[in-house]
Length: 114
Length: 114
Image 1 (cartoon, chains in turn cyan, green):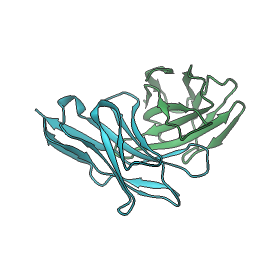
Image 2 (cartoon, helix red, strand yellow):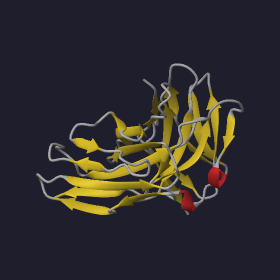
Image 3 (cartoon, chains in turn red, green):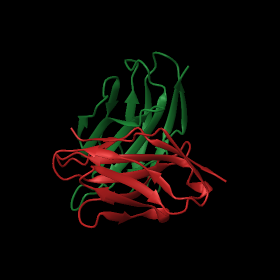
Image 4 (cartoon, one colour):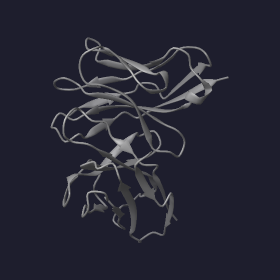
């Protein structure tokens, strides 16, 4: 079964500093990977996805993610964090059986300190 | 959250009662999904449906039931058989045809058992 791991529970970063949220995956075959963000008591918002091609994927709100096949990672990055980026971030991988099921990681709480 | 509505936002239930959570989408998506979110556990799939009048169990279907009588609607019933129903419930939808498609999420329903 496909799975993702988000090894850190919380990421603290100062406003203006680079932000990185880590994700590693385990799949059989080529991975389809996603990042979502969740603000308190809200649904998830799609940020970006990797299907194939360029290893650097650009998404919404200035976020990008780097796909690294040798390290089986798909880390989310932002060059300069904003206080408004404080939220819960989820990495997900799609099942390979074509039904579009997603397996989510446990989530990372990001706290951007003013 | 655009295009998918969930109601109610907050729901309180007494032990032994069944309750139904509503999910409606106007995105013309074929597939719909129900997830349960508990703190520190990410999202877990309850049920999903790829077509009207058909649905499949996810990873934690016990104590839940669904129906898909219309393409736009995918209500979830939390039955009295669900031993620990207090959680945040998220509905999502996605296209199925074509490229690898992201899921779009509703704003969620927070269920509390009194």
